[in-house]
Length: 318
View 1 (cartoon, one colour):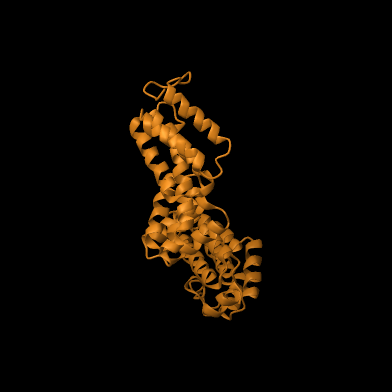
View 2: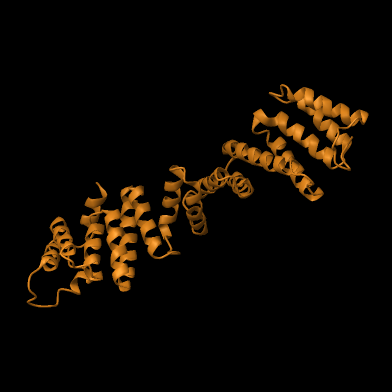
């Protein structure tokens, strides 16, 4: 069943409060607005739309008339048209704002239940445009997953955060998705706690994918520190902890040689020469070490024989 059918079935055909405000004029001369009101009250929404559009074309651009047209579009599930005319109604008459937001959020809720996430998201976006900071309640998680699936991770994150504040369904899966969203926008520092949290919520058999993401993000963050000129000892210690986490998990398997090499460089920068040599020596035993073996051997020899390289920072192993 489509969104239009669900809305028409669920919403009463009785005249809404918005329309009734204009129905008490008694023997008012029949015009396009009156005919639209009559058609709406009879559940003839297509006819009501035609009459309200005619009224607007004839110059009835006051807030209540525009809101009638917008409300009828909302009733039949035409979200974009409803948003357009509600925006015009609010511009003409500020008192229409509450009606507009309420209507659009109702349409969003019905769209969610119908499985139409595009209509849901469009309606919520329009409502938020009229009332920034509006609470979205139970729509938070469906909205987050809609944007996540569409690859719009930056837009998904605020809704994921709202969902986590409440009692989100399938909490471990939500936590994992939040970690992925952070990782996709390049924010491994916030992604890592989510993946670690997920890992603590699930059985051992479900942890491998999280381990892969933890190892990837930990290596990326440690590498960024190691490549930063003049990194403070405390930052290097943090980076060392991250490479150790990657090695402990053994994921991703195809970068373990790089992780051992990076560990050697960090230990060298910390002046822990024996430990650095041991790390470089481990490179040869990692899978897919390849050409990195010769580089690791070179660094091992530089430290062992004290030859060093030009430009070594003071305090680094030579």
